[in-house]
Length: 253
Image (cartoon, rainbow, N blue to C red; front, top):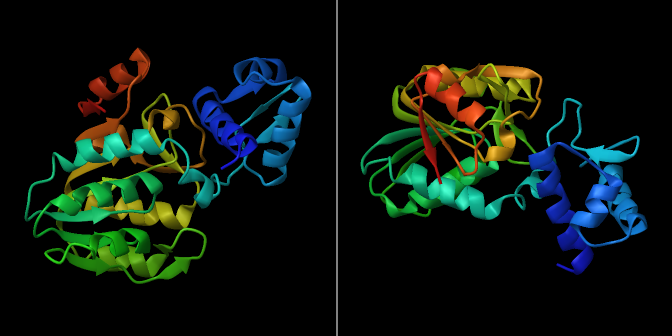
């Protein structure tokens, strides 16, 4: 990865945390000229990864999530720490539902040290990862495969997962608002996530701290339906208090 690619990756991470910044702020942050920063922004905007505003730039406000391949490169260290923390709370021999997302895929890798897990998933990447442990039983939900991230979505996947009752549901989401609503972009994906929440005895949310306050248009559920939230520090007090008031445990990686 060359210097410009690294800078654009860091720019995306910065905007995920901040939401919006001016050209001047970004030029100072990354020690480049405003002209260089505008070129970076134009390239990212042309591929739909950021949205230009008057005098600045922010994450897209529309209904689409960040491109999957780009999300895999964001917050990789934070996701790894979150995943390891989640894995510490999953005992050998447990049954799990795991949904679509780059953070849940990191959890799948962290779970490979476990023994005799039964994993139900609508994420072909998670299935591939978990199949690497011969002691695991891996069950894949049927449905429509989404080409860009190999997620299995649709009514078929939802109905299949409803036939099971699992010890743990491990989910990722696209955003959390100040009222504690869990949010995502694709209504077809959301229906499966809701089923996982409904059919799991204990539900863990695994998400990096950039998701707090990030907008998305479809409601998955509420933080009070979760047993625990696993995220990374630092997390503002208003989010900590919201989770505590919902009666949900918070673990910071």
